[in-house]
Amino acid sequence: MVNASVCKTDMRGFDSRPGLMNLKENIRTIIIAIGVVLIWRGIWGLSDDYLFHSNPTLSYAVSVIAGLLILLLIGKKKNSIDELL
Image 1 (cartoon, rainbow, N blue to C red):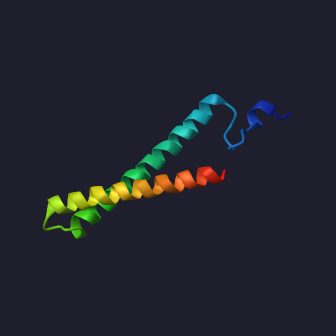
Image 2: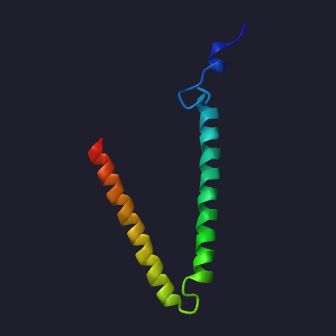
Image 3: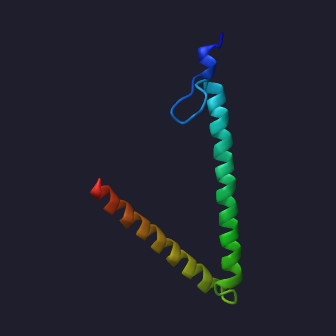
């Protein structure tokens, strides 16, 4: 006979046992964090090589402005989507 408590999973497919679920979520979070850091490192390196590499101050200013524009655009898209819902 199979113990039913061992086979239970929640809606995300994790085991219902708290310790195992926390371990899986922690491992997933660490993997995602590593991916984000590697993307950040790649973008940083590319910007150092190609974005006004002879003028660091201008490169930093353009990076800040581009980042702010991206965040503003994402914020506007989020607000328009929220209005539709």
